[in-house]
Length: 103
Image 1 (cartoon, rainbow, N blue to C red):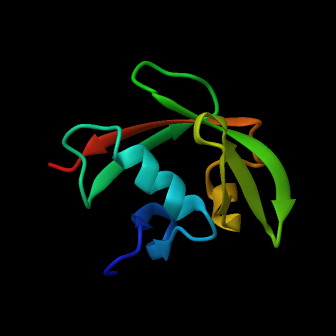
Image 2 (image 1 turned 30 degrees about the horizontal axis):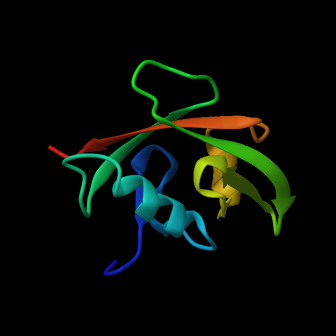
Image 3 (image 1 turned 180 degrees about the vertical axis):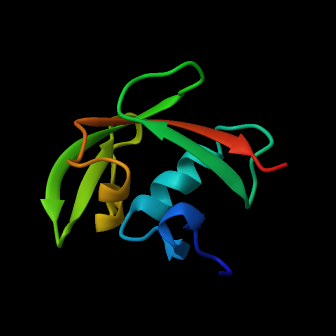
């Protein structure tokens, strides 16, 4: 989808699910800090720090059936859809991220 950050996960039947309500701004800001990542990327995430994780989002609150997380470093907040429950039974206190170039 042109101009939007979206994600796919065939395991859960997710295709072109947009990142919205601030999560898009967080991704834009993170992408600016990672070399060789442009308009497509692989996002690796976990509820615990892992080798290569460079960014951390902190849980703020549940909102509109989804979850708001904050990136403290840039004082940005963004909403994650209820699809987060595909990966975690409950929203973790922190989500650690690594962005990797595609291909």
